Image 1: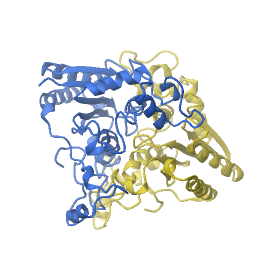
Image 2: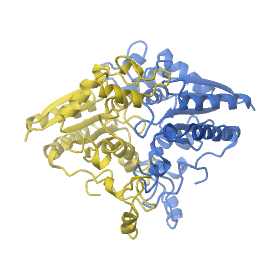
Image 3: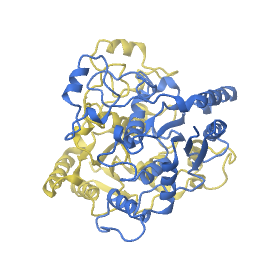
Length: 270
Length: 270
């Protein structure tokens, strides 16, 4: 079955490793019969900041401007700026979204955070009821593919930057899974900038090989919304009891005071 | 002793709760004898995206543009754009930086991420040798002060969003402590938007009271750079041995496969 793929891509240079990773994804997925669209954020000069200018026409309460409320209303009434609605159309069309970027400060670059802040509008991408396992995009998949200047050892549970699983939790749980996306394991390119050209080629070949089977991969495990009560959104007591004797917590963030389940944000089934 | 305080502030509306929190900080700290400067990012229309336009004059390698390398060189040669150098001057002057913002997607809003990406330049804010406990700003303090739409119970180790300590790790360790800042416990305003006016006033009064003693607070605990070897940046074996029998890991990210030390990113001495 032909899939539609959106690559949200953030690098300033077309000769970068990130660009090569993006191009590799376009090539392989197209060969597999997918239609692939790329949102090249720097080339688009994508507006990163969430402001009142994102809304056409009158604001509901200009004196007490709330982006969360005003953008929701504007989305409902078709009054969001065209650059936002264009990206939202791409999200609706897509079966699968890949975010390709260089990690800046343990997170996405500001221009990509701007895409997240502005495109994943309240109402369009989530509601109080429709989030996490009941999220609006639960039929879609998403993943992070990124470079970092660090070695893998530095992002471990005994490394200077700490466990990469911890750093990924806000991005993968708080953004992707929050909107319902089934999240595939991240593709992490460790320190390509300080690697030899051969080692860089090898990293891209590994990505090329993974892309062949990417559409059939099992997603990472998250906790079903059913496991939480509807008031304080706490794990239900029967769920807590069921896991009381287990060695590990349920997920990186939902660790119940136990050791984190190893590779929870890095490998499917962990 | 009079201290210089910089508040990096990101909210679109001067009638917002975030604005009130910022104003409260300015008032109390000024009364205490501090000189307080505010960078009001939306009012400044602060550029969020890291692009080649941040650099004056010729690029070293325009064909293979690397923001990390080019901005470092431009900083060394005084060729960074004026909006960046102006913020860098404020950072140099400041003894203490407060980041005041509404949490967007488990992190800072894009405009504040842009300040971080662009102002904390390679060379100016960190080098390979000078980071973490040996970081360039180790004589300075910094803290996060933010609102979230969530209740505290939702950001716990048994709550739907997961432990707030996990979500804070990339921000507090990966950005603030990475540059050397001594990090004070975060000021978190839980769901002020759905609270009564009385409850909101109460939150601000709590902040006002904390501000009175803020400059004397003990910072959060992080792991000294000396504890890691210089090659793979792994915890040295003697440090690992010393902690092998302990109940908890050393820090949220550097958890050694043990349960996370409770409140590690929320309370001093944890």
